[in-house]
Length: 435
Image (cartoon, rainbow, N blue to C red; front, top):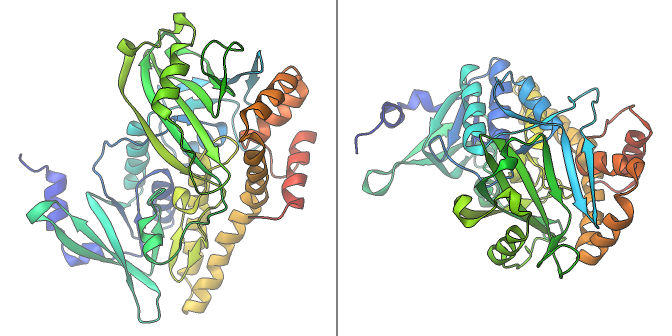
């Protein structure tokens, strides 16, 4: 097969092209956001992506208002993206529509966008800001000084006998390589065993619900007809993607790093087969296979900065245990990381660099440290599906309570000021120990 011009350019890149102020590993939302803000500050940024675009990622494809706000801050054109008004929460024999609240920091609407498209659009936006994107560069290891500081990476380009290793040099490296976090792991930064781990499985369907204005959140999974069969562990969703397509998925979460051992394919098939017939969730309307992925939660890998390595996004466990959302915190953390890196690179000594990077880890703790701790307690509570059933049965009919719960579960509360429920969640997040 003839090689594309992009692949040919990457292979012919000389050593001068492999030196940058910052090397960012992984062009998902975390890596692209970090690279974008660094480039906007005038830094030379090399963004390394192991795959070539377009490429898929397992995700519900739902974008909360907080994620929409981050995408808007990057100046991404969202014309034609599917918008939604909020969540239709189903459970305990009830169904309640919860509109997205309009806050100081986020709009009152969410969106859906397939990761096949979203990730490339964010990476191209970073490119437009001056980032040098290297696709097909699989980072294998870090380059370190004799004292252990990270000063670049080694990446593998190509496959088989044509594969070769190239070095990228920089003063700081950003690990945004997703749940595997291969670079951080190779440096001995392991995941924390007592933090929650989720698993999500999803498939696409042709369905009349594809044009819906609400994202469905099923807090219960039944083995047969609703209220007439056994409860299964986990939760489900149906997110309208537009063009007659729905992202349908289920998830489960464990309070430790040991993922729940559930027969996802069987549970998914059973659950979908019992959805309303008019939604047309049949095997004939399924587009592609059911695929699954792990969701690293509640800062399950730390420290988020050490000796020239900055960890952002899923690599650092920046996924909420409340709802499995990771795009908004990944992109916001990328923004925080870029601000700290810009300041750190102005320091002459390594000690000064490390001191400046404390602003990054402090920002993470202030924004999510207490909130993620609350999420750990939530997971321990709902691991028993009967407890979830009781909560939904008696909680969903109470609109004022559900407004509070909606903000809590979706990370849609204001960190300062706001209404009484915003202040209550903030107060709770402050009094619990930060993760």
